[in-house]
Amino acid sequence: MNLLDGKLISDRIKAEIAAEVKTKMLDAGKVAPHLAAILVGEDPASQTYVASKEKDCKEVGFISSVYKYPANLSQEKLLEAIRFLNNDPEIDGFIVQLPLPKHIDEHTIIESIDPAKDVDGFHPVNVGRMVLNIPSYLPATPYGIITLLESYKIETAGKHCVILGRSNIVGTPVSILLSRKSKTGNATVTLCNSHTPNLQAIAATADILIVAMGKKEFVTAEMVKKDAVVIDVGIHRVPSEETKSGYKLTGDVNFIDVAKKCSYITPVPGGIGPMTRVSLLLNTLKAAKKEFKF
Ligand code: GUN
View 1: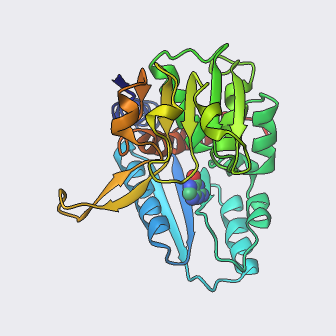
View 2: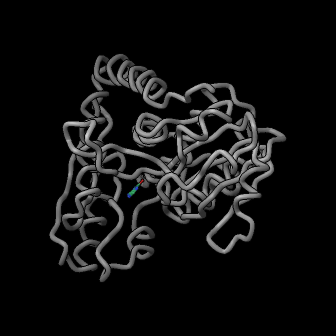
């Protein structure tokens, strides 16, 4: 078994981004890329994610801004904040941290973001362009997954990829990326959901198994074909006496069990998490360079 070391690969990419910001932007008298985030409410996981994004920006020399609003912010006020960022020439890209409070309609919010600044790749224009293989911002986790596979020269063409979980931000877009006609595509994809009969048996036919179902240590060795590549997108906190914090992180895959049987596997933490984070930086760099025409 080999580890797919997302931390190592993302550190390398961050060093490349930082070098580009310094030599091609700052030293040339240009401003650094600027990423903004809107955070509504006090969800602890969302607060952590946004703080990580700020830290990542700092590490590569980007400017970052966070706009924090209380959970009772009206939808109209949020739309107003988005219009402001859409029109601010100093902001290259921004994200609205999800989930949003129940009284706010997520689709309305995402559709109000200027697609040219939608570095999350969630706007229907960016999703549509992704489906049609038109260059666009790719959602961070799927982008991180294909970058990691590519970095380890794992061939996807002709492979059977099984994806467990069809969320809008992971399972569905990664199914599209892997099946597209492209260097990191050309796979045959089976996208499973909670209604899929024989999920275990289907998973066991995968050359590449991507698990993004949000069920702690659900995947065991008998659900994995010998020498498969296993990508674990799950992240769960479990109590632990071994750590100072009193908890440790685990994924949707039973790592110890599956590691014995597969050829490659992502650890949790240190696998897809850091690849997701660096993908947002890559999208922000593309936004600053106006790489896509809208
Ligand atoms: N919540 C969980 N993941 C994400 C993400 O990638 N982007 C945003 N905006 N919210 C999230």
